[in-house]
Image: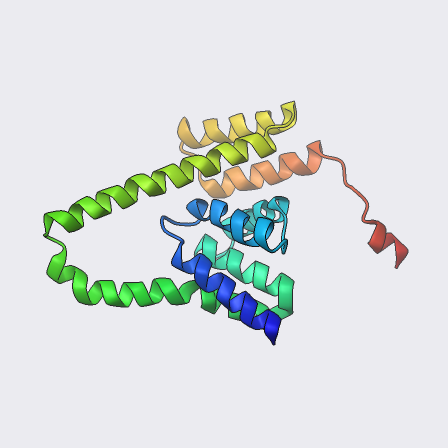
Length: 184
């Protein structure tokens, strides 16, 4: 029960500090889940993000569900998800009550402008970390450049880009054997 409560508290903290969407959350996940608790690795975070990209729903909520499931099974997934969405949902309810009254105030407009800039900085930090961590060889750079070109130049659907990158990864990278699976 202690681990369930820690999981819930951790995702309340993450949910309360998650502004700007899924990618701005990566530095927070790194601090809370990798560095502080050692629950997952950055590679797992990237795997969860990859899976969350192709599953329905909000990326950050899906990642919370995956981490909770890894820690404590289905119940852990539910607890992590509820912990993550509770602060945002509470804030949305309060904002919907009060924002319509205060949205036209110059101070509120300036605060939102500052928040947008901070979110942009968090997303840029995430991009830099992704570039450092995954551009380790010619294959990864090639997949990235092709995916970027397909997206920007040809406006290709993200579904086709992700499927193409998955196929490229399948053919370009060797399969590593899982020693534990071999022992069974």
